[in-house]
Image (cartoon, rainbow, N blue to C red; front, side, top):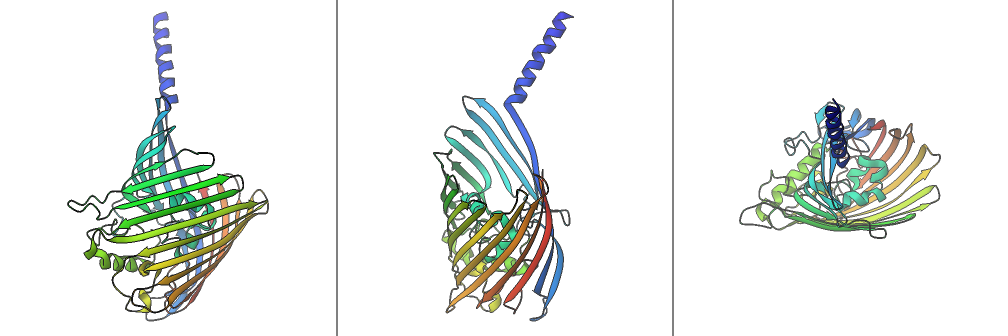
Length: 398
């Protein structure tokens, strides 16, 4: 009897040690809002009409994820992260379209090693633009500001397939990152290839970030690695998807040529209760075809886009933040004289009921000049140069 009790105690000790050395966490976000959009194109000529809808992933994409770490000893750990997106307004998988319908863990699918040297991850993942977006309006408004530039310059978080990344540890406030995406095309290494380099610096109230990313054209228009920086999101409008497909077709005959170059420079500073931030980005795309109509004058179809942003988040109380941001993009198109302009003004409030649940309300206006207005949400505006959206919703993190 004593021997049996001793054996059980030893087994229990080993089981406890094994459990302490490895762990798996299930987490997620459910984010849904009611949105009103003025002047949405109806699809019949140049007519527009107002639109009400229930949108999933207003600030952050709704998701469920699994992440784990195993202590290998000597300060080395094995890590993994699998993250699936979904649209909780209809119960579908995020990205359930022709481009991404086969991707279950489309948001993230990585495995790697972490230690005193930093972290190495392999799989499908975002580049460092996604990390430094914490200093921008993406952190507060999320997808509300996507169509005015941050959806193109990668601040919204665009994934690179077949990639390997290295992120340093925090070095006196500085963190650096390298990423390389394999094109995986036989006989043509550069086809679909991508790489990026970035860094950030945190020192008290000051935050600075910079990232450069470049991708090469792939081999087929249906391949999502064709233009790694312009893949449509789960909530992309039909016009945005069409622009992506047009851009893909324009580059199809130039596999291995530069598809996209994106540079982001961001800064943030905390002045007491107010966080003030700004950023600049430049995106270049090697698009060979010229737009044939105003409908083709979109950011996704531009040869060069410069985006400027200024914003603030003011903490009125521990639970309530007031938000404001101005985003302005200027686009140059192949074969078109002059520049298209987009300006978006966004105001909002975010109220936290608890550490995991918040209520938000936004109002945003987007104006376009000499190009198509993609709209804030709910769809493009057709021939109208202005759209206003009002969104209110709830977000829960678990």
